[in-house]
Image (cartoon, rainbow, N blue to C red):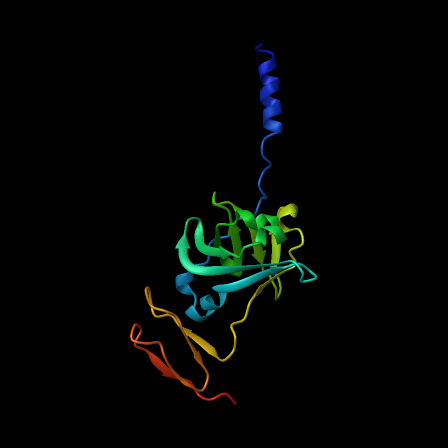
Length: 179
C-alpha cells in the first residue's frame, strides 16, 4: 500500500489545476503623482473587440477601490463574447499605463499594455483569444455630467442652454452656444 502512495501523489500533482499565466511583475502606478486630468481619461467606459468588431464587451473602469484593485462593471453577455470576462472582478492600473483585469482571487487574468499607440492583450491564449482591440469609448460631445454626490441625481446639460438640477442639487451652469 505504501509503495503505491508516491505514484498516486505524483499523478494527482500532474492532473491538478493548470498554472496561471506568468505575467512580468509591474509596479502599481502612483496615482497621487499623476495629473488628475490624465487619470480621468482612464476611468469610464472601455470596449474589448475582436478584429471584425462583431464580438464586443463593454466594461466600465471605476475610480472606487474594491477587493483586489478598483471596481469594474462588466456588461452582461461579455462572458459569451470572451469567456475569460466571466471571472473578472476588479482592475488595476500599473506603471506604463498598463491595465490588469483580475479575478476574485486577486490573480491577474488579462493584461493590456501599450507598446505603441494602442492597447494589446496579454495572458493565457484561451483567455485572450480574439481580443484584438481594447479602446476607450468617447463621451458624447456637447454634454457634461455634474456628479452632485450620493443621493443626488446626475444632471446632463446641453450646450447653449440653461439647465438646473433641481432643489436637491441646487446647481446650474451656462455653456456657450455651439458653433
